[in-house]
Image 1 (cartoon, rainbow, N blue to C red):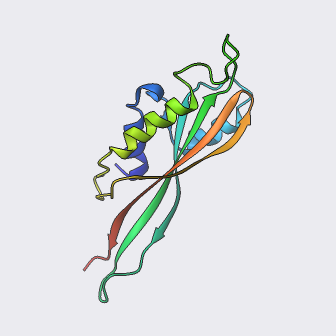
Image 2: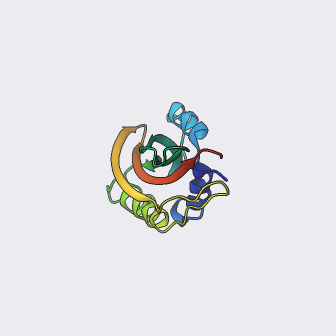
Length: 150
C-alpha cells in the first residue's frame, strides 16, 4: 500500500466521512459535476508535492523526502431549518476537520514500502463555495528516506 492509499484507507474509518474518502480521479469528477447533488461530507486525498533534502552520504543516495498530502473536503453549505449554514453537526466544517485531523495526527503511516515520519498539520484553506458545496483543503506533511541501491 502506498502513502495515498494508506491515508484513504485510514480516513475511510473516520465516522463522519466513513466510506466517503476517495482519490484524485474522483475529485476531478466531483468538481466537474457540482451542479448535480454531491454527497457530503466527502474527502479526497491528493499528493500536493514532494521536496528532497540534501544528500547525507557521499557514495550513495540517502535523502529525506518530505511529502505534502492534501485532503480536500466537500461540505454541504445549505441552511438547516434554523437558518444555520453547514447542515448540522455531522457535516459541519469544524467537526469534519477535527475528526480528520485527529485521525491523521495519530496515524502510524508505515506502508509496505516505506516507514513515514508522523504526519504534521500544515495548513487549511478555503478552495471555493459553489452549488451548495463548501470546498476546503487541509494539508499535512510527512517524510521518509530515499536510498540508492548498493
